[in-house]
Length: 280
Image 1 (cartoon, rainbow, N blue to C red):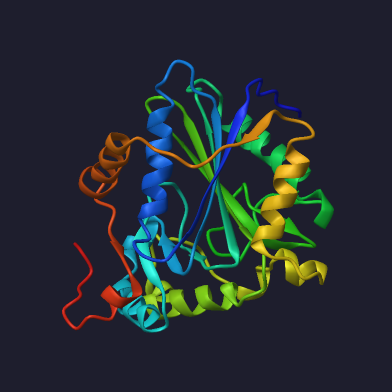
Image 2: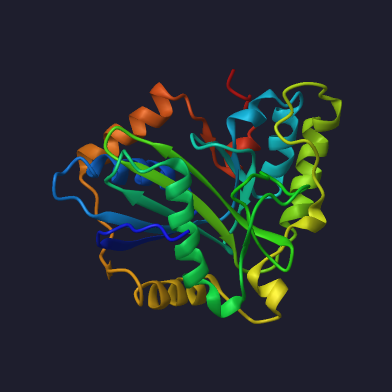
């Protein structure tokens, strides 16, 4: 079904992050707050984090989460507890993150997912036809997984804010052992020991792939950004715009996520400190 979203979008790329894994989420949150402006346009925000585990609230119940995060910290992964739905997703320099923000609190959940699915079908059409639907055994498996040739290359999660709607997604661009990382993470964290309230039912690393790995092409994150922009602009009014934020919105967003929602965030260096403990 075709979903019409009749408004222009600002295309904003805020680059690659390597410090606090919370920072790109703070910027998404601040952009969502900027939708309060009566003349606000939609925003497509692109970013990369190298590298961290983006945990879902479900993962907080894992019996050995602290042990798993310590181990992955030694391997160069930071971590953050995110506010959007789902379970853990590994991010690295080969994963493109995209947030689609609409100044609209009335669009239905399914309609918003369908609209962004259309954006992806158009934006990634050079690489093949996407399939949408849960990829069983993948990390953070859900109804709005998207895949190529039967293997998951990304997923989507959304939520409402006071002033609009935000849908966040990630796209695996180059080939890395992300599925195997998550198999090992959940093994260390004690997924198999849990009888109830499991963050995911099971994990099979072979269910996950990437654009480069599944197409056999040398594809970079920058390539995908460029193709997304050029193809999406053929069907929707999208204007590249320098990334800017009001300082007060950034400060308020950081306070909201860290203090009100109690989202923790640690760099790899912090996770390997001798006195680090997982917040209760």
